[in-house]
Amino acid sequence: ETITLRAPVASQLGTTAGLLVVYVEPATAAFEAGLQPGDVIRSINGEAVSRRPFLSSTIQPATYTFEVMRNKQKRTVTVKSPAKKKQ
Image (cartoon, rainbow, N blue to C red; front, side, top):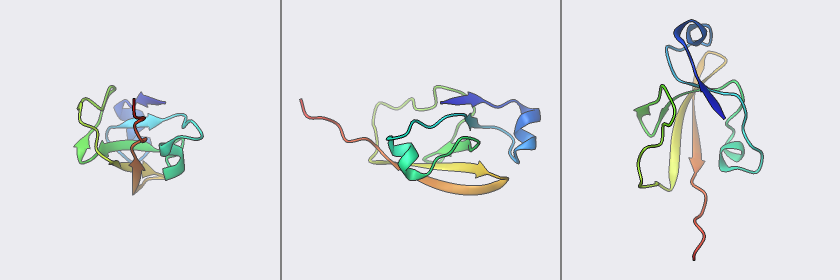
């Protein structure tokens, strides 16, 4: 779960824009990859994110690379796409 950051709050977190992670559901790929509440998502697969919805493509890659700010330091978190169930 994320919320859009406004400039004053973003600057306090060491960034200019992004989505603040407020909750990560346990037993999800994002949780397993290490995404944490308090992280600020700045980009996904190289595309800047500043508001929701941020995944507009209908093509889903096997992994997503998140550039996040955590404790005013840039980190990269790689999240595997959930496996699609065969129908």
